[in-house]
Amino acid sequence: MEKKAYLILENGKIFEGKSFGAEGSVTGEVVFTTAMTGYLETLTDPSYYGQIVVQTFPLIGNYGVIPEDFESEAPSLKGYIVREVCEQPSNFRCQGKLDDFLKKSGIIGLYGIDTRALTRIIREHGVMNGRITTDPSDADLEEIRSYLVKDAVESVTTGKSYTLNPDTTRYHVVLWDFGAKMNIERELVKRGCEVTVVPAETKAEEILKLNPDGIMLSNGPGDPAENVGIIGELKKISESGKPIFGICLGHQLLALARGGKTIKLKYGHRGANQPVKNLKTDRVFVSSQNHGYAVDINNLPQGGEMRYVNANDGTCEGIQYLDIPAFTVQFHPEACGGPHDTNFLFDEFTALMDGQKD
Image (cartoon, rainbow, N blue to C red; front, top):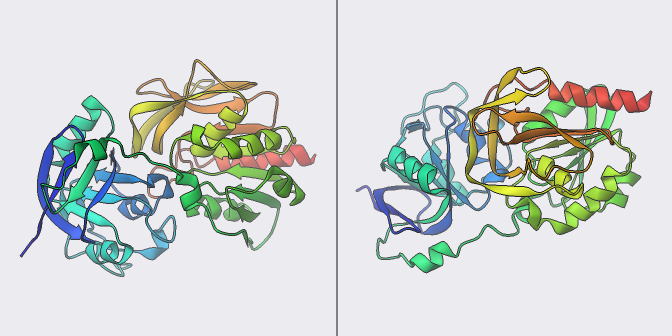
């Protein structure tokens, strides 16, 4: 018999559905993603730490579980909500069912609810906390409202440094791991970068001792302003003259290190169809995004010039630094699955490293 399960929002609204994945109850920040493909990448993206993710695309699980597509070794999200779960996946690379994967990973799932109605609530009222449970009386609204995503970066960063080597090495890049997606590593290695991945707590002095040609600041979860120690170390890195490329959280952290400010968005940008405009060329790119915070356009960092803007809401999507060899973007040029429109930014990074070598 299918087991009933419920989503209880902090405003008291209750959605009744059915349980899949792991059993139990969980509280988290409820967010939605509009991506129409790449649910495995969504599930394993460390940037979703502490959150209950709602897929707006109605059918999830149709190509099963493919470990080669994971963005990390295991999911970091709190819970997973879909309209319909495919119980008979079909794909030549499939190695299992989504339900079994969530059970093994300890991720609590909910399906069979009106995800369109839920998404409209989040869009109209903003991101809110919620609780997935099989007991509808298990609803302490004050407790749900008080939930906060804390210690996010510390919870998802690598436990120790490691190195990835390409067939032919042209550059040495330090990837500062704040919750890095594996495809960032793949894109760097593809371009001849020997990649040394270091934990988030690594000091600036240790990074500079590695004598990298460039430093990559990764994506990651949580409130960027919470990472006071990292921001302090990053300020030192930014003054070193080393080429820097930042993605998502890395973009926000460099802005904070250089005196800028960040703001929390009403419901964030999560999906694979976000339009971003290059302010110098007026060209618009389709991008993959996953973030709930943005750099404040009214408080840009020292030496920073806004390079990309979100074509939907005018928020900052990228910064070019004029006084240091650095640029950062809010979106994901390494997107997989998702659009590859901005993949060229990795080539801009290698060109920046070439320029500093000359």
